Image 1: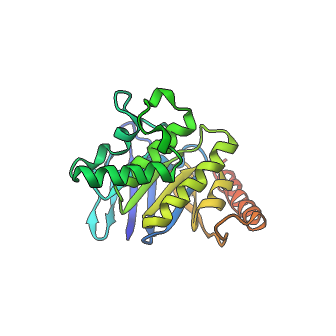
Image 2: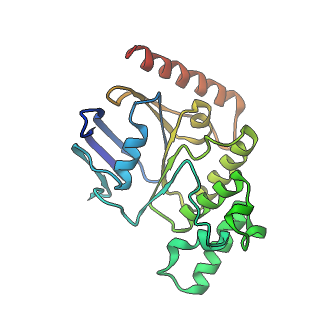
Length: 244
């Protein structure tokens, strides 16, 4: 289980990014973090990834402190961040150096097939579209089979059709190994489609405003998605008005 206990973050210039975040994320759960600018969503993700240090409180994975990068925690950024001198397949398999070559090839081939990039395995990242590059980045994160996968607005730069396509690829990969996923997004509709729960954060400093269980079945149920989206949008608006 991934746990946040009274987590706070204050930067050297005195900016309070987070205050008193207490939250538990169950194994295999998809949790969305939603909130306006300045509510600390990405900061919380960076703390969980071990890329930054909390000013107070603690983050644990199965009882182990996450105060530095952890092999059981993967991270996908807004940009694909593929290595341009490696092929698509080499990028996807980059984190599998400790595995034997046959297993590495098999896992990379399977991941590329799951995200629809099997025929692009030997191409260079520059030859792919933005959506294809992000598919490769998602495949790279899943191929290592992390316990926890942190997603920092990975679909925000994509058009609506490509984003919807990637939602399906993400859920397909998640269904195979069921890692815990924490997704940062500005899109409440995306939360309704992907998440089991959504946490609405309030800004300045980032605090939990509300937590919602999302009963939307997978695959999509448009009516249930719309109802969950309306509920989240109302909560998001209320959280911003409180700080106006």
